[in-house]
Image (cartoon, rainbow, N blue to C red; front, side):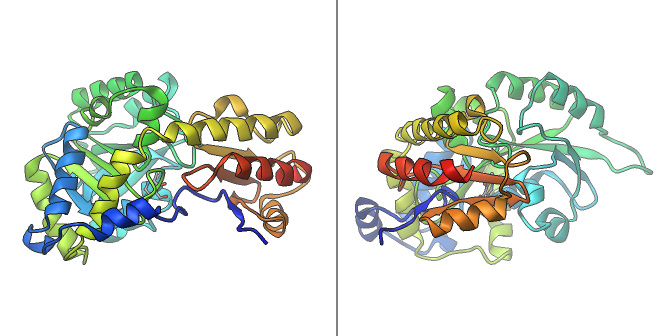
Length: 347
Ligand SMILES: Cc1ncc(COP(=O)(O)O)c(C=O)c1O
């Protein structure tokens, strides 16, 4: 039987033969001593792309996010973010458990940052709240928004958020695990996004197809502090240029091709929406994620996932009646056709 069509996540990709060759050929050194030339090149390159002074290679996006938040928010202070943000929903309470950060969330309608949401965030900001209330010091946003369905936040909205933050004296963190997708879908320069924030995390192991790795960018001073905390958390890695090489290769070869993933996601959404318009809102599919709303369907999310798995298609379950399909490097046109054939009758 042929391999399943794995649409659970863009993290499931295997490194390509050419990426593996680049990894094998990488120059390496001890990165805890700052002596791995490939890691140094990756950190410098990503920082430059995002318009920041310095970068730090981390094993995961979660670590990059949590280091970024820790740089901005001290124990007992408050971070605002949306209720579906990866930093609060999927990092296992790290902000509170490891850094003593208090979070307050706004409702997330598909991860958007529209005028109504911005007004709500402004209302929630409580800088210098005095001795009786928690003081807000930072706001985190996610672009593209994972649980929001791959939504791209427009640069203009981020500019408005920046203005609000500046007038309240707050700092901004971007979870840019899929900022690459936002950049390719919108045509907005990575640097323009990056400059709106004090700290930005980006993942190499999602749409870009590297097996491991993220980069946190910020000022040189902040990254020096993050380097200490990375080591403290056990994230000081040694001859890790073999992994950084995959990231550099991905930036050279897998960035612009994200447009193909987006086109395939649109095609998949369009075909499924034609059969089940209440389940798939094809016009909302902006990048590589197709959310499935199964509230009015005859099948629930676990039921769909089980039935699809039996027929060779893997689907991600996000809730009792929410599921997700994600296109990526290892999904070609034939895989989309197969997924459409399997999923259409189930929906
Ligand atoms: C938006 C977002 N941020 C952060 C992460 C964390 O990445 P990692 O799994 O490498 O910790 C993910 C992972 O899926 C994500 O989707």
